Image (cartoon, rainbow, N blue to C red; front, side, top):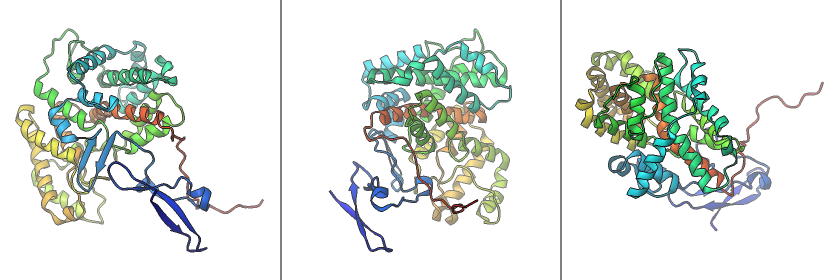
Amino acid sequence: MSTVTLTDNRTGKSYELPILTPTLGPDVIDVRALYKETGMFTYDPGFTSTASCSSSITYIDGDKGELLYRGYDISDLATKKNYLDVCHLLLTGKLPCEKERAALDMELRKRAFVHEGLKGLINSFPDRAHPMAMMSSAVAALSTFYFEHLNVTTAEQAQVMARRIIAKIPTLAAFTYRRSLGIPYIYPDIERSFTENFLYMMRAYPGENLEIRDVEIRALDTIFTLHADHEQNASTSTVRAVASTGAHPYAAISAGIDALWGRAHGGANESVIAQLEFIGHVDNVDAFIKRAKDPSDDFKLMGFGHRVYKNFDPRSRILKKLLDELKDDLGIDSNLLQIAKRVEEIALTDEYFIQRKLYPNIDFYSGLILTALKIPKSMFTIVFVIGRCVGWITQWIELKNDTEMKIARPRQRYMGDSKKIL
């Protein structure tokens, strides 16, 4: 086994730490015995250099702009497969055959209905409640209806639990939206597919045989696929941390929703559209770019740069191409599109942005597509939740099967007062 030598310059004593080799990506230094052997912790705010687990679900190479689900490139999955194919891939480790695809499709259609008691919970919220707050509460409440999932002991039980939450998330999402408008809830239509059903439950009125265009289904399905999983980001790490305590899986998903709500995470695409609307006209773009480059101005350009991707976000390339293909069919807001294209043009050619690797990310393009689908800004992060749910629950299953799993318990560098004597 390869090792790295750590030398304490204070004492001259050296320690050998094992080096673990992954399938892809950089080697990792195994520091699990560090405190026991040295009496020291590592210090890594934000865990930017720390691998918290071993995983076989998603791989990201930020320098190359590469994203893989179970070894498959995201560009292939997003253009050649649909979201349910990706769900099957993440949950089982393999792409479905036709029979498996049809079985998963029908299972999710049947499981999409929610207990009537959940309507009472959603009705109890104020009219102006944010959908993410309602969503987090409703998902946590699911644990009371399916308490048996607290003790998942077999692979079959895990699959039932996972497929149940994946199926019900779009229904709860649509219910939170309709509650905010005070209009009747629309139940799932078993004749409609997963992605189509969500748009139907968002838009339809009782008794209406609403037609959803294929171009709209394709656009939203692609967004779901691109959001399905993204390694150990803030919300996924939150799901794993909660899961490590032995909490109910739906409570862990609820915590992930709360983490995703943050504007630095899943709420970013909502902020992108709000900012484009605030800019107002393409003629105003240059002035706002100037503000973004001014170190004394706290204005920040939303939708650019990424914590992991240092050259480009592969998901943004897919959405940009999709946006170019579908802008006329979807009816993209021409004013917003002009503003966005001018901002994009400057960011891709201006040395200020190039040197800082501030390239357009997925949030920059997804907001424009969601706006064209007539999904309000307050629901943007909810759409993220729908897509990411399969990743979260797959991560939960993986953690539960990990024999090295321990309760998440980071250490700290204490900077307070020394012990005081009364």
